[in-house]
Length: 78
Image (tube, rainbow, N blue to C red; front, side, top):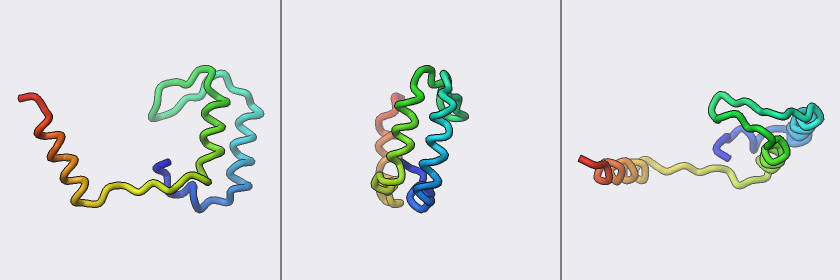
């Protein structure tokens, strides 16, 4: 998970919120960043429930980021 806040929340309260959504049993979950998730409620909520226990995301440092960007530029068609 790339949401650093999930590792510092009160896990009990967090899971209670996840369960409250589960009790609604929605057919569709809408997101501002992803397409509609139809029939995926259980899978999505299971993933959310595991998030606080996942290893924290560690992004690339500046040097690694610059190397990735350079690789993108050389791979781009002319």
